[in-house]
Length: 426
Image (cartoon, rainbow, N blue to C red):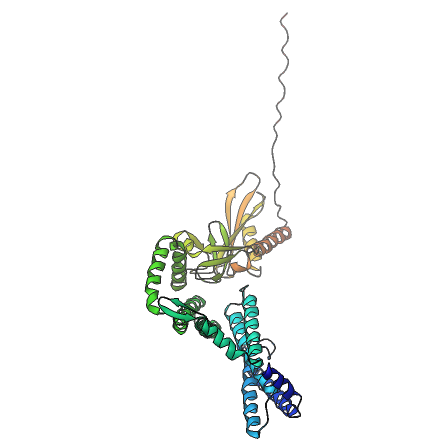
């Protein structure tokens, strides 16, 4: 409490105004540098890294880092001048806490943008960081460290204090967050590259993230003081678990890498699996997302795509053949009608000119001649109902212009005359 009273008394001295001026200048300079760097990246038509700049420049990692460095430089300058510090004793811990919060939250947001527990992690890190700043400012930090070190237990014959656990957890968190940041940066760079196929980029990103997280986990466990030789037993237990209870999960992960490597199914392909037809919107390591044209989405395990029959309309050639059927009257010039219908369908926007539409006399129906109009499209992911409707409208318009009748169902009734009544015998 004496240190806190001295700090409050120092804040009321005139020297505190000098500290305030230097602190405001450090914050303003840090904001200016961050803003200029973000503007320079935007002018180069590059997407700014959200970890560094955030959404509003000041809510990224770069601003508190620069502010902390400039504040520490100003602090050394004041010490050189012989000024008794007061305000900077408050500012330095606050900036350190802000940097830790921004770094952790931004990395998790970039690495796992759709995760629901990122907000919970942000609140936990914020509470820990701000409580640490308060303990540091009030001068209770040495007493807290001594108290944490005094609470120890024996784990495996080795004494482990609460301070060791906290330090190991902090080191593990920093290492894992750094691994996530590096993997997110590599993923963003790979996904922006157009020289590599999208499926190959996905598999490279998945392998890179898995490798970095594995290495980060090993370094984090080592930093936490955990003997890595003990992982041999854990690895054996994990292998048994995969062999019995997790074999389906492991099979889905392996199947995901096989699909991405073989490129038998690619993002954007039109497929039909178990009666569900749609476009592949994403391929994860465990499952594949198929989005139907009506907006419904199916999550299909990757093992299913390997072991069952899958219809892929876009594997070798994205062109798809569509058909529509119409009947015309028997007394029309069917050859001229067939030629005119082919020309009409060829004028539809999404119908390909090569191969050209074809009209065939497919059946002699009860009410008229049945004509099958066949045409090709190259963008099945945009739906088939619209182009089929446009083709039907073109066929209907052409028949009306030619005066050709689309026959209605007809039935012929034959009346039988009643037999003459027989005369009774006389």
